[in-house]
Amino acid sequence: MSVYILGVESSCDDTSAAVINGTSILSNVIASQKVHAEYGGVVPELASRAHQQNIIPVIDTALKRAKIHKNQLSAIAYTNGPGLLGSLLVGSSFAKAMAYSLGLPLIEVDHLQAHVLANFLEKNGEKKDKPAFPFLCLTVSGGHTLLLKVNDYFDMETLGRTIDDAAGEAFDKAAKILGLPYPGGPVIDKLAKEGDPKRFRFSIAHLPGLDYSFSGLKTSFLYFVRDNLKGNPNFIEENKADLAASMQYAIVKSLGNKVEKALQQTDCRDLVIAGGVSANSGLRNAMQELADKYHRRLFVPTIDLTTDNAAMIAVCGYFKYLKHDFSTIYAAPYSAARAKLQD
Ligand code: KG4
Ligand code: ZN
Image (cartoon, rainbow, N blue to C red):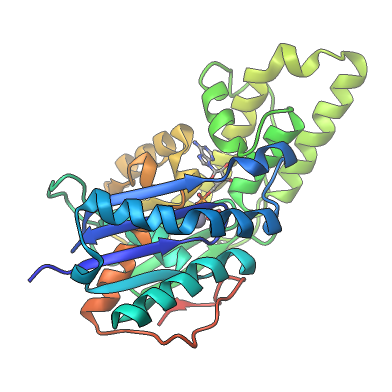
């Protein structure tokens, strides 16, 4: 029997709804909020207002594109956290009301688990290889940097995490320093392709264990650019691509160092990357090199499934549906990452 899950995502600045059949995507509609660009970052109050405007048309479009009537749905899965509370409240309230009115099971989903499980989604009826448990997953987004040992769908051990900024933040802040628009990651990635990654050297943190730190790197980038601007007001314009490439190189090197250490220390058979920063071409190449060196298979989601989307929420919901792991309308959204990504 077909299992149709409607996924709803509203944790940050993307309003998204998706319908999947098992692990296969039928629709995945994403309304990105342009309103934040002029502020150089997400403004929480504007984000919740935009979610309120977007949520009904986005869900309506997702059902229409999937050619599924709401009465055919098996369950509704929604992001319960971590994220901006005002944003989460819009999606979660809507999902709860819709499930309640249709008499459908409700499934709460952790956004970070969903990023990982995006690697199990299939498109256009294709059958693809899936990562085998236990696998190592580098989860890198605008708000989080986690190195996980994924023992099962809902048993994710944190091996390392950032002690300050997330990798995505480092990209976004570097872009801001260079006067580039938000979100900065994709712009830096594009510029870096034309630049020399070894032109400027930015020192990366060497923390013991598998934890990360990006705040020192961000500060050294800021001071370097500021000092050079004193001698040459056109320094950024004249060196933009090299600056982007060198900063990307430092972030990727920092991420790669700990992944390599984790590959040496664990018995993980596959290497997986997830989250918005996993769209980065430099990171993808570096992970492929590591996978080849250690004879592991590398899994990366397609670009549209790396950044925030509701298909990943729906697939996480699907695996919970199979376990009958349902929630109630009383589940409260949470803003910070849970200490353990385990149920
Ligand atoms: O997963 P995501 O969409 O949202 C969060 O859950 O945070 O990640 C957004 C982050 C932003 O920091 C954005 O700059 C970064 O992912 N990002 C990238 C690329 N595409 C998105 N960073 C580097 N290279 C990219 N191609
Ligand atoms: Zn995310």
